[in-house]
Image (cartoon, rainbow, N blue to C red; front, side, top):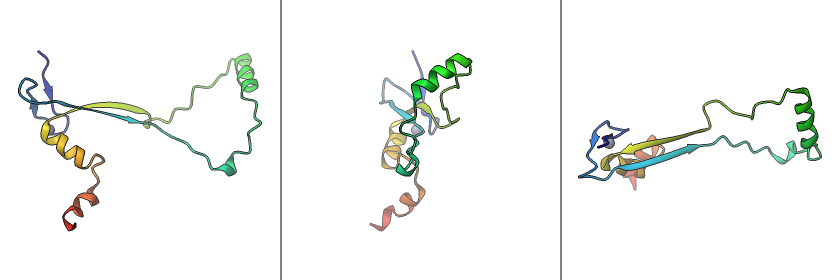
Length: 100
Ligand SMILES: [Zn+2]
């Protein structure tokens, strides 16, 4: 039998008695250049690629360290409720919550 523990509070989740909430978070680095930067439309990527292959110096794909990641968390009922109310842990949102 596989035992799960809540990744937020650390409490053990008894999957026979309670629901385990599996949360998957995917972070993707997105670069959206403004139109002013798109002056290179006629750039011959295929030609550049073949040149890179000829030189044997093809670069690794652009990877910004620490930004592209997928994570999965197990949450207990209580932590799932809190996560759902405030997925990003926005503190100001929590502070202003009672004003409405
Ligand atoms: Zn928890």
